[in-house]
Length: 295
Image (cartoon, rainbow, N blue to C red):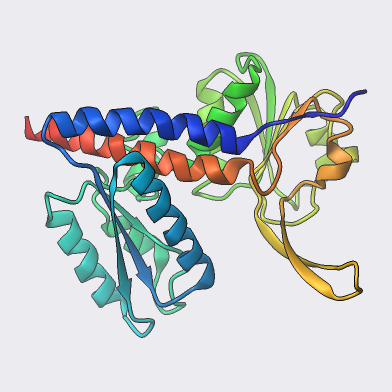
């Protein structure tokens, strides 16, 4: 069997960004300037890298980007106040809260504070809940990125057997619901599911979002299946000089599975860049919906 086609997330992201650039120009012609404000508590390295990436891509698409940096010793009341101020500011059309937060701040309660119409990550419980009714104000951007990548492959979801490994509230569960709404038959699993390979080998479409490096090997995949790897894990491996080096890998053993699947997303370069672009698409969608509410 030939090697799987590599689903190029960077190319998909570029296409989405081009669409967003035109949509932003159209909105500005109507007097609306989409503005995304990100809140970062402390200086988590991953958050700082993500913020720089967001700023760069926002500049490419014409979205105004601001980063609000709060000190690491900030408490929940401090974060609530800042989010409340952004909710009340009509010039702010999108809000996101960088993770992780300090351990003394409850992340879901902070996400609940974001106005659902400005919640561009789609993580407010109101938006998560409305996904189940097929009417989210703003859907979770990672779940939307997964569906976008699946559609680029051209797999027919109606009647397809999809297996989703991972049941997180922000990624796994919303993906399962979105696929079911497209008439796929969905099996939801996790890393503790007995005989996991017995389930995944029946999948036409396998989506893995468990957060465990190397969980899915070739033995888990039916020949010809489409595999979407949402996992982002940092691992250390021996380098050519014998020293350990850090690298980013997914939940799927890529080199094994690419010999079995018909199409597969790499990590990095798969779901990640599309998720960032979906954040921008959601920012435009949020601005449109806020404009409609004011009309």
